[in-house]
Image 1 (cartoon, rainbow, N blue to C red):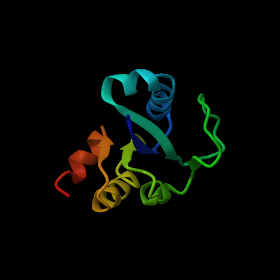
Image 2: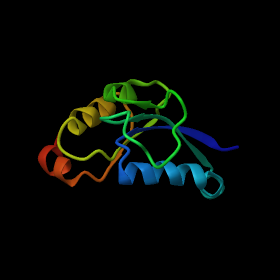
Image 3: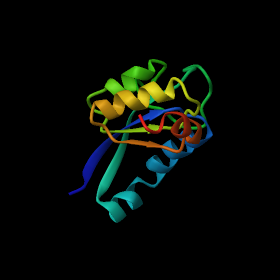
Length: 115
């Protein structure tokens, strides 16, 4: 039996969009290798009207970025929006809520890493 991980994504540009596509199209292979099923529960973006090259189920896309972190069905937060803010405060809120965070935001880590 696979464990389901609810994913909250902050940002859905090139990197975020690719992640959503991979988690969707390669879900069976990922589950077979890891025993984990990653379910994208919420995606926070700056502009919900911007066209996206991937399919987003109703209710998943939001411009209320804090709601991604606050969503009780989100177990893991992935930050791919870049920049210092609002990414920094959102990551800090996720960590304070006990949620693991994945980011490659070098600018933010350099500026606020010790936090």
